[in-house]
Amino acid sequence: MTNVLSISVGQHSSAGIKAINQDRCGVSVPEGDEQMTRGIIAAVADGISTSEVSQVASSTVIASFIEDYYATPESWSVSTAGERVLQSINAWLYGCSRNSEYRYDNDSGYICTLSAIIFKGRKAHLFHVGDCRIYKLVSTALQQLTTDHLQADAETGPFLSRAMGLEHQLQCEQRALPVKSGDIFILATDGVYDFVTEQQISETVRESQDDLQQAAESLVDQALITGSHDNLSIQIIRLDQVPTESDHRLQTEATQLPLPPTLSSGMHFEGYDLLRELYVSSRSHVFLAKDTASGAPVALKALSTDLEEDADAIERFLMEDWVARRLNNVHCLKAFDSQRPRQSLYSVTEYIEGQTLTQWMHDNPAPALDEVRRIVEQIGKGLQAMHRREMIHQDIRPDNILIDKSGTVKIIDFGATRIAGLAELGAESELILGTAQFTAPEYFLGQTGTPQSDIFSLGVLTYHLLSADLPYGTGVSKAFSTAAQRKLSYQSLIQGERSIPFWIDDTIRKAVHIQPHKRYQEVAEFVYDLNYPNKAFLNKARPPLIERKPVLFWQCVSLGLLLTLLYQNLPV
Image (cartoon, rainbow, N blue to C red; front, top):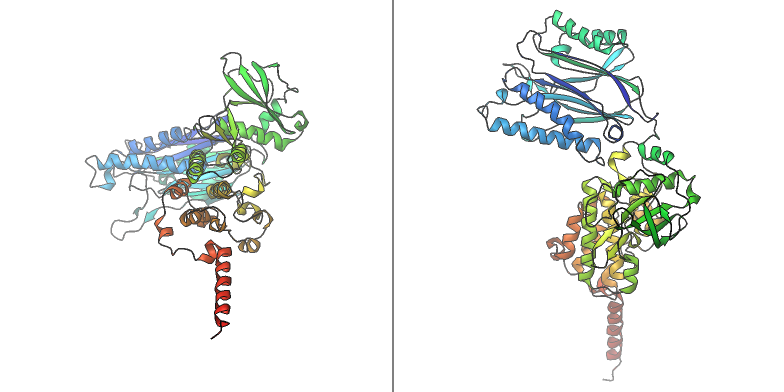
């Protein structure tokens, strides 16, 4: 299979001339989906000789980093997952030192260094703290990819400026670089690289490429012969196979399962009784169905058979199901994992008896401000759940919001969602997948979506609920350059027929700012400001009448001019 990442490994760790080996190294090569969504880990940790418990730190770092990294959400990027896991481990080590007899002596506490690589897709993600090293074999020479975190001292010599457990807040060096089949990486502690030259490492690895384990053991032996007085650890990783740019599991699944036959009400299909059609379009069919095993009502969705050759449509369909099965929030539509092997491609979600926000707006053309707040707050909670998992919905609009009979609001249709963890594999479309009227302007410049893009769409939706209009008209979807976007002008809600507090208008204005960095940074901030006046907005001078009511302003001006003219023409 072309989408399988495979490596060869040689590693060796030795106490050397010391009684205890405080170094630790580890490699984890998961199977199946986990390898695609999480990747392969190689890591080396080096204890410090001044500490009697440093081996506890290095053992904990390697074991916990591997175990906890694979427990993070699949949707997270490698950078986010690795950083959060390391920060957590660092806090634990730091706490152990602070609560022990070593609290006043950093050099004796639970401290170690770490260098790790996570291979995922076509990239190597490096995490580095301390003075272990990561090299890449380039032709016949070694290229050092990490920086030694050492600080010089005239009296005592160099000492570690960064290490796991050294300080409460970890400073971790990170970088990512592209890889290809045949690339070789070396991770080593100073007990090795201080006593064998880069040329020796390069020659030994090249001469023993068929037996990397022998190469690792040979390099440790060479370092001991030349006088290494420290623990010694080395890992040699060769990438035997790297996925192609288009390889990822969703596409593989699409090639394994055929589209279902044409479905209709009354059919029995793979353990479901299809009761009636809920929605039919040229792209998909949604049925109210009953699970014959549990008796529960569900919504069953299948792609139109006309899209059997449309790889992009199938990919978005699979993406929607992938996202929905990983979200567990009352304001996001929930998909169900099939308890039976599927014979064709379809998805099953909870059945929501209610209406779309589009239908609700038709029934409620002038909703009260409090009602709008209630709806927006619930959409915001759903978006927050997605953003915490590094998912960007990218298509927030009235048709993608459902309101059930109890008034609970749910986000649906995750086919356009950007998932950081899958985007690293190239699993994202370059097309603008959202709906033009609600799409953030940065998409029209070819930029990648961020949480601020969803905040823009939510701001436009809020504006639309209050005015049945759009804050920039149709201008955003026609502005394909920065210069064109600078010319766009926000149409204040205060100018409309409804009486909207000016601080509400300022809140929405900020949410839909053309420049992403000037919008709210979190959905919760926007929702809060919709409910409670922001002091920054209240402290602003009340907008002049010409901005709030331009027609009334000019009517008053005209009346004033008329009265002046009449007064001047009165007989004396």
